[in-house]
Length: 256
Ligand SMILES: C[S@@+](CC[C@H](N)C(=O)[O-])C[C@H]1O[C@@H](n2cnc3c(N)ncnc32)[C@H](O)[C@@H]1O
Image (cartoon, rainbow, N blue to C red; front, top):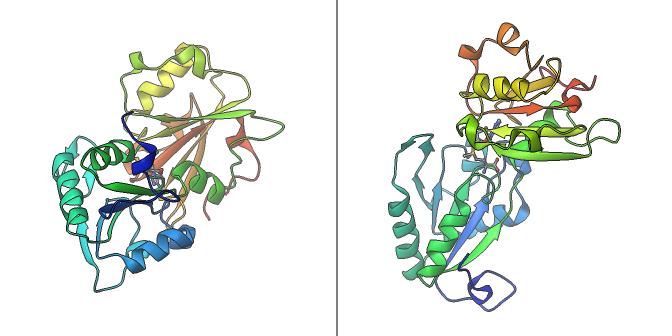
């Protein structure tokens, strides 16, 4: 990565042109960090994604210019180059720019690419972490991602790759939780590959839609049964898939 520590954010001296790359969390506005909230209050312009919740957007003062640059998988409404160019241009005009992203900016959110392009253009970057969907969904569903009795580790993965691109034997480990982001459309392929590579057919699995929002829905099934139990047509975005013993805990909050 061609980043230079001198151009990154605090506590080092900053260039004048600056962008704050801010995580908005998974939806519940109370999960926003205090730093993210302060930067939104101080901003001149905010660019936000589709997954930034309405409750968080409502915290942006009305005088702040606000642009939606949302993307859906395979359907980029504003090309990434245009987003980068706008951020760079506003930063060089001396505006206080917030690039607001759902969850955490450095997890499956192209935050790394945006940071690199800003730094290459002489813009310094402050990165403000957010609660990622895995943490938010799991917490609000009562699913501990690790647990002394069931899981010693957790892997966060994108779920939209072809099955041939995953290292299945490495992923199918005892006492391990898998979290697939963007995995619902590909769930039949993912679960078939897990079964084929030896994961137990009765391994529990949870699908959490609208995590941390009042509309959150959690459905629990098993690797082999989910297609019969869960109507995949009815699943709404955003949704996260968690696979592992931890999803069988009695604590799982199915309909909070
Ligand atoms: C492009 S990724 C962005 C992830 C984000 N940067 C993060 O840290 O959570 C979008 C995917 O995150 C998951 N996701 C984000 N917010 C969610 C929510 N509130 N409930 C369930 N899944 C969510 C979904 O799998 C969705 O398809």
